[in-house]
Image 1 (tube, helix red, strand yellow):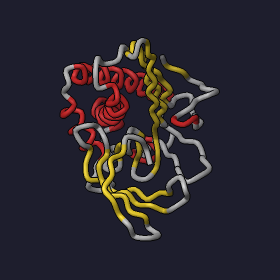
Image 2 (cartoon, one colour; image 1 turned 180 degrees about the horizontal axis):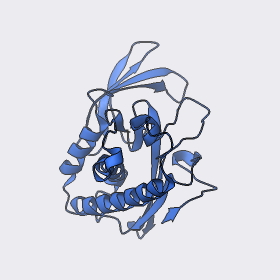
Image 3 (cartoon, one colour; image 1 turned 120 degrees about the horizontal axis):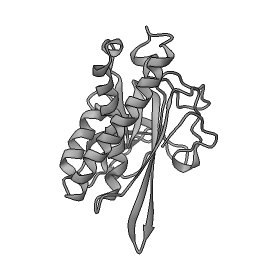
Image 4 (cartoon, one colour; image 1 turned 180 degrees about the vertical axis):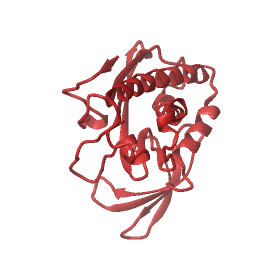
Amino acid sequence: ILARKQTHGRGRQGRAWVNSDSYNLLMTLALVPPRKNLSWMPLVAGIAVFEALESITKFYTELRTADLRGLRIKWPNDIYSFDNKIGGILCESRVQNDAAYAMTVGIGLNIFSSPQLEGPIQATSFFQSALPQMKNPPTELKSEIRIALARLIAEKVTALVPDLSRGDTEKIRQKWMTAAKLNHYGEITTHDAQGKKISFRITELNAEGKLAGELTDLTTGESKSVELDQPL
């Protein structure tokens, strides 16, 4: 499902998703979830968007000069360019008799422009970050890229879901580690629920799909090893 306009876009924890351009990507995939390893689906969705953005630059001559050095996934599946957010993903499942029978994957991606946000998270778009020289892409090209990205993402999600059903999470783990670029973005500094400033140094995405690393209280200097299954 593709939309040009969204009036009540939302992300995790009820946060709003604001769209600033009718040629940005607003899409929802409806699919039959994998028979097992359902908790890996948000990671699969993030990988699909990351790889689709990489692929789209090879399909269009106009995009071949794109600078993809900053393109990455931020735990668990936000899409970033350097330190600015360009996309968000929300996976929701329907459960009956303790089993998921349907899933939606909602994706918002700033392709050409980005909104001004209040708070610590700053937004940008794929074009603003990777192709700043293309100030005003032709409308026809914008429309083509939007549709092509939607198709690529759907194809890549569909291709990865069978791996989860077979229990092959190692392939997904390796893909996520590559897309996260942890050698450059392996440390997160933020505040916890009590307002303490903390740092989380990422070690790896482990075999259970959790983010393993060292959590440090920057006030006291105390550190401990933890595993995360939710964003900090």
